[in-house]
Length: 418
Image (tube, rainbow, N blue to C red):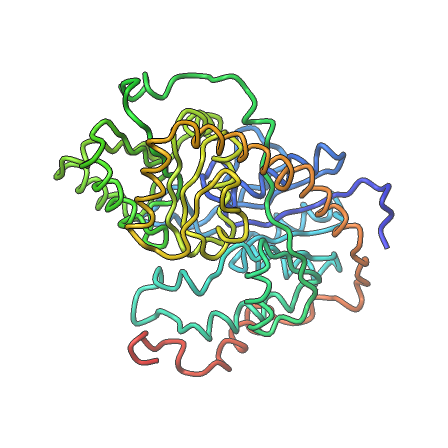
């Protein structure tokens, strides 16, 4: 067992990292920051990196045509091996079961290093990004997820629901529930700039905020429907949408062609420190996604003192409590959602009370200090693998393809054929 007094050397493998803006990149960045505060050395292997970060091994890859800020990394085994030999890590931690996840498995087997994997995303909810006729059926994704998780030493799940899903898939390795915490300190700084001045918003306008990837699974069409109804009633209201993604052209079309749309502000991706100002200076955060693994953005909004109205599904249900900074609805129901939003927009006392309760809720239950300490304990609990028993004596990619082939011909069938 690794001594708890030892300072660890950790290598994290990820398909995304800051300055890219998404929940996984934010999670890795925060855990790194707080683990380093505890005295550990954290290295990152990823296709993105902040400038002048000598602890990130930058991996090149293929740029996605529709989302140029993201790449499909192509692992360079020689570079990764050199990093491992140079620093001799105590733990490796992968954050996606794709190309760099496979590289992490290879590193685990070759060097006998304990391997933790965080299953950040319910992959079955994202199959629509693979075009037909190649969209894999649900059971293929479940089988692959189980196969990958059963190769590592320990699995981290952000929520109890994800843990139950993985166990249903057939994951037999130990699973620890460990959400990403909130960097409360970053929300306590003084304002850097005024978002009202920046976007020419009057003091009489209410500001609604959405932060996230502009994609189908975020249920943005519902958000636009809600805003259209609110605009009819309030007029003096703005919706700021922070983020980018495949739905942006559709949102821009709505913005240009409707009266309500002219009150929508699309910012695209913005820097992390600037994003905090949008959280802090908005009146209300609205969120209707029903596929979130955790939903860090809603907790960040509470940490900033901005109440949330959201749909209590998947990860949102696990991280928010109704009345503790947020008003929740159980189903995607436009009437109920509108009722909650209107209640907060017209009741300053309730809005202020929820703002206070939300900050307290995040501080007491979702601090990054708490989560980093839990992850540290998990790392210390791992046994050092014996290299001779964990040697990389098979072709990992061939093994993966073989396992997937056992699912059957359905992997290349369309949804209609299932």
